[in-house]
Structures are given as structure tokens and as C-alpha cells.
Length: 350
Length: 111
Image (cartoon, rainbow over all chains, first blue to last red; front, top):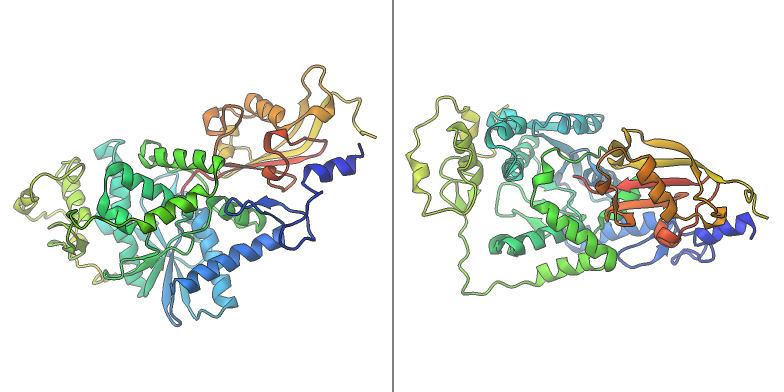
């Protein structure tokens, strides 16, 4: 067989791109199983995200928007595509980069170098809470690390957004992430989260609303986009993540995707269409007595976890709560606790 | 006519490991390799299946389970042959030829 023919046969050259019918396909889309060329891929990728943004009315002209930028694949592609679409379709947005430094040596300090090449606002756990993740893990051990980090990061993003005086926060959560979260919440029986986790915009009644333009975007396509466009991103697993429960959901989703790629979007659809029985008791939303942050308990999770850390009680706030949490009220004011921790969200001065 | 019918090895331009996979290969992102064909095999029989097995033996220095699961790559690892998704060329049955460029990208990390 001719070498040239062999090569083109191997590359699917006997077929052409499904969309333009002109060029050689380079990718098989998991969403649609279509074989498409590079140029058409860029077009559908960007256009679909534009449609998600417009169809869900994610932004209003003139808004200041912070992009949660970790230097990883999703946030790097997000920053690139959002600024491109902002320009191309005249969204009229003022875009900013916001990064959180959790204080994980060898992970975050490296990834932040990638982000720092642009102008970026960095908020650190050390400044906000008085603890780095490395210090936290030293105290609590290798379990429940993600609980602390996730809770702290959520607040840290809000604080950073308040510093930047933005109207909205966007994060790079992709379809795979959201499908994993749906499964995770089912596995844990977390009905409150299950009802919220597929919303494309959340926190509209809180300090800063946040949205996920990549909600229907497959992780595979994000990586391929970054690869073909030669976007530089940082890619290491957080050293504490191997112990995370989410890992099981992720493994399962990846296996599912191999068998039936559409499953990821279908899980999201199922999540969107869940309705909670009216007889199910749901937590009521209020505010934290200590810091004023949004909370369904007397104290918000971050305050509970911090209190545990500062008192040397690493298990505080972990696991199912017993009683009404009255024991949290009996704490003396900590002279060592930084005053920053008790400030109301949005009222920080730096 | 096949250009390499008398060779017993395939010279790949490079194998690239991205997305964190390079950590399994002594942090080398790019490898230029000559792959010896299995005994008696014809060079047109050399597929990704053979290459994966070769990579696992020769390039992966630690935690092979992060790279492969069974006969194929771990779900979440993307494979490109000459910048083309291997799903288009038959995945494991993709024929590998002289001077091919193979890229493995892991997606299994934070974004």
C-alpha cells in the first residue's frame, strides 16, 4: 500500500470534516460523535459557549466580572475564550483575574506563576484565615482536606471579588465536574446541594453571584482546545487530592464516558429536572452569627472549621451535625484569632 | 511500496507526555524513541496497542495505573497521533508508522 495512502487512511482521511466537508478531521466530539477539523472545532466550541452565555443571560453590559483563575486548564481556557467572546460579540464586560493561594507548596505556588504573567488579584488563605492548607493538613491529617479547602476557597473567592468590586464571578467548572457533583450529592444524600448544583448561576441572593459558562462543555474539548491553540496551563494534581471522595465519582464518570459519551450531559439534565418532594425538610438560609456570611446554620461552615483549627479540635465541623450546634456558642473570644476572620464579608479593608 | 519493510524497528519522531503525565516519565515531556518491533512482526502490523505496551515498559517509571487501565489508556487520558484524535483512527488499532508523533494528555487534574 502507498505510504501516503496508508497515512491518510489512518487519519480518517477517507472521511472529511462533518461540518465543512473540506478539511481533514482531527477530533471526534464526545457530545455529538461528529468528526470535525480544527477550524470547525474552534468555531463550534466558541459558538456553543456564546450561546450558553446569551441563552442563560449570564451577563449584562457594563458588568465587572472576575474570572476565578487557578492557572489550570479550565480557567486558562475560560479566560481566553471569555475575553475573545467579549470582544467579538461586544458583551461590554470589564474582566479581571482572581486567584486564590491556598498555601499548598509545590502545587499552588507553581500554578500561580502561570497566572501571574497577567494582571491578577491574589487572595491567600494565610491572610484571610491565618492558616495555609499545608498547616491545616499538618493538624487534621490527610482526611477531609477538601472539605476545609473547598469551604475556605468559596469564601476566599467572595472576598477577592469584593476587593475587586466586581458584580459577578465566573469559574471554569465544566460538564464533567458538574456531572461528578450530581453523582456525589446522590451518593451522600445531600438533597440541599443536589437541588442547587446544576444551576448555571448561583448565589444571586448572596454577596456575589457566580456562574459557570462551561456547564455544558466537555473536559476533553477544553483540553483539546488548549492544546491546538497552544494555551499554556499548569497541570498537576493537588497533592492532597488522592484521598478525596470525589475521585470515585470522577473515575466512574470517565468510565461511563468511554462507553456512552452523552452520559455526562444526560446526568446534568437529570440533575436539572430533579424536583424535591415537598415533604422533605430543607435547611433554611440565614446568616452566620459570627461573620455575617450566608449560612443555613448558626455559624457558617468556615467559622466552624476555623474555630476547630484554632482550638486544636480538627474534627469540629466534620461529619453529620448533632443537635443544634449550641456548643459553638460557648467559645471565648480568641485573642490569637486575626480580626480579619470576624469581619463581615465585603467589608474588608486591605 | 513500503519504505521500511526491511527494518525491525520504528523510529518515532517523538512521544509527548502532557497534562501531568510527564511526571510518570521522569518529568520528561518529550521522548524521541526507536521502538523495536516484537519478534517476527511486520512493520505494518505495529499498532497503538503494541506501542502502549512498549511505553508502559520503557517510559513509565512510576504509578503505571495513572497511565493505563488494562490494555488501553486510563479513561481521562487523551491520545493524539500526528495531532489527530485516536478515536478517528480506531484507537488501539491505529497503525503506527515511521516518524509518527504521539501525544498523551492527561485531563485528570484540577482546572
